[in-house]
Structure formats: C-alpha cells, structure tokens
Length: 96
Image (cartoon, rainbow, N blue to C red; front, side, top):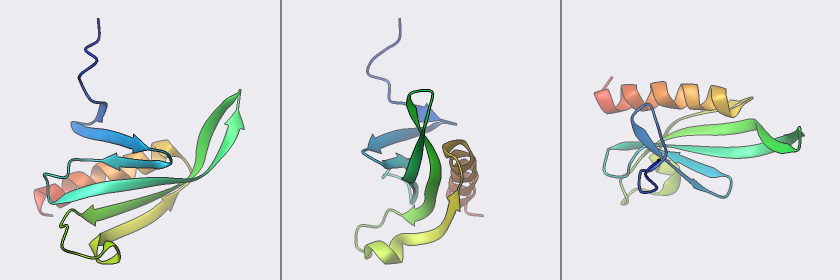
C-alpha cells in the first residue's frame, strides 16, 4: 500500500502544484524550478498541457521576483518541460 505522506517527486526532487503552477525542487536549496502551464488541450476527455513555461529561479527571498529568474524557456509539452527542468536544476545545484 502506498504511503500517503510521501510527496510526489521526479528524479529525487519534490514536485508541488498550485493551479497551473508546478514547483520542482525545494526552497531549502539555492535554486528551484517553476513550471507554468500556459495552455492545455483536451485529449480523450483529459486536459493535456501543450505550452509550458520553464524558469530556473533563485530561492533568495530578499530578491525581487524578476531578479530571481536565472534561465527561462517555453516547451510544447509537460514532458519536454520536465526534461529540461531536471537538467537545469541538477546543473545549478551542482554549481555548473
């Protein structure tokens, strides 16, 4: 039986969702990824993201929101966005 207390994660980092925003990573680290679903289409009775904004952000609360953004991109699917997000987050946390 699955443990309900375990958060959803992808490649070792937690995922949190609030409406059309998905946060990938933890605020305790220096960087986090913000994914924003910009548009979705209906496929087989289910909404599927077809335009997703990806942003690598610093977690420093003293910075203005526009100054936190390190990198940004747009992808045509949530899968492609998560793929880029995982690489960006790993490289940023490794200091590369």
